Amino acid sequence: MGKSLFFFSWALLSCCCWNTQAEVFTSIGQMTDLIYTEKELVQSLREYIRAEESKLAAVKGWASKLDALTRVSTSDPEGYLAHPVNAYKLMKRLNTEWSEVESLVLQNPADGFISNMSIHRQYFPDAEDETGAAKALMRLQDTYQLDSEAFSKGKLPGVHSNAMLTVDDCFDMGKTAYNDADHYHAVLWMQQSLKQLDAGDESVVSKADILDYLSYSVYQMGDLPRAIELTRRLVAIDSKHERAGGNLRYFERLLFKQLNELNQPYQPPSEEPIQLGTYSRPKDQLPEREAYEALCRGEGLQMTEARRSRLFCRYQDGKRNPRLLFKPMMEEDEWDSPHIVRYLNMLSDEEIGKIKELAKPRLARATVRDPKTGVLTTANYRVSKSAWLEEEDDPVIESVNQRIEDITGLNVQTAELLQVANYGVGGQYEPHFDFSRRDEPDAFKRLGTGNRVATFLNYMSDVEAGGATVFPDFGAAIRPRKGTAVFWYNLFRSGEGDYRTRHAACPVLVGCKWVSNKWIHERGQEFRRPCGLTEVD
Figure 1: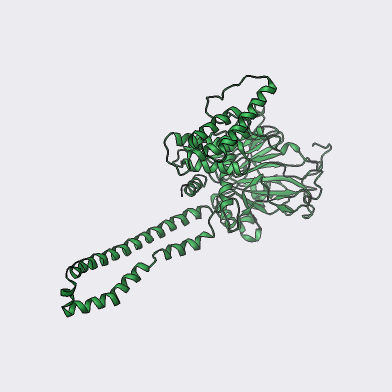
Figure 2: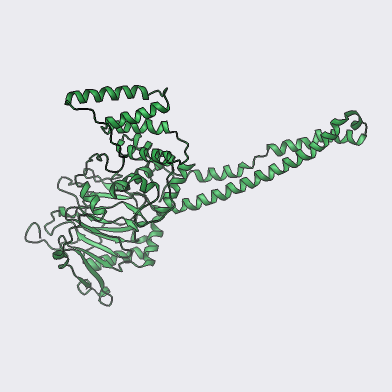
């Protein structure tokens, strides 16, 4: 029960969407429905309790009544039965009333509750969802450099919450990492579980089980002295443990061999507790991982005073576009080169509400275009849910598309549909290009509209913590601001890709993140954005 409540509590903090198929929780838009579902189930559970209490009270009433009768009848059975009324009532009780008692006892007040559970269970998160939520917390832990204790006590930047993790929650987090051969995170969470258990917190899991996972994960991290010390603690608790004795002998032989080969004396394990930074996080396939995550934390920004002095704000009328003449768009420079601008009051609250309303029923796991085949597919580096909206869906979509065309001066008739994305617990989109590179000639072949020349990104919510759009190549971080939009070109005027525009959506730490974007393609821009004289104009 504790494990399930933890994941629901965390969902409340991070505001998520699901469907009936097994799928990691990657959105927030519809997960609020789960909160109301849980409330309904609690009400159903209380009704079941009342029914059980009513049933028990009735059974107790029968028991008291029959107990009084049997005390009298058994004191003098023959004298009791000598009275014809008593004889009749005995026959009646055994033939009728005891049958009523039997029927009462056989009644199952749980039927209504079980039926309600069965109806809602199809929408419940499954084991894959739970694993995905655990990995999302680890992703947040890595990106924002939060130790396990901070998570366990609900201490997130700028947030005060009662969302606490129990000993068993921490153990389950560690076990999830362990089962995925992620011993780095297994160590962090098993250590936190052990720390809370040693502090006197209640738990179902035993200290022996925690030490079993922790000691082996520490060994996998290459820390033999500490693995030996932890295994000795395990043996002291459970001398008959099926693996501990063998592991201890193996670790000791391995350490002795290593020390002999290196001609080094034995060094006892550090007395410092294991914490964030004790072991190095394993490298992955993303070359700019450190720069990307640093930008997400607000570190490594390259916004100098000299660059800031080149940034301006202005009113944009779309080169005297009739629709913008009397209400020009407020435009702010976010970056000078490549030029990134932000438009204020791009979407009204009413428009945002309508777009979200249209998108929610259609949200599905976000996809990326396979660079070799051009087919849309899911990817682990993009964790969100998205929906595609057409102009025929509602006049608001047509109005937004027209506004994008008016502001940018680009033809949106060849653009992709308006994509709406909703990011949930740890939702992110790791560094990527919006345009196709030379080694991906077929990425947009099926569309027949050329490459993605520009990106128009609408922010449809504020985000309490995390969720920035970052550009690792030149050290920019753009924070979401509800109702605003950012715009940049992915291609130079020559049609060559601007590789500086590789960008990412940082994981959402706290809050709900809604965005919508329009990918504008080359076709139709021949006279609106003519070619330059050089490759990088």
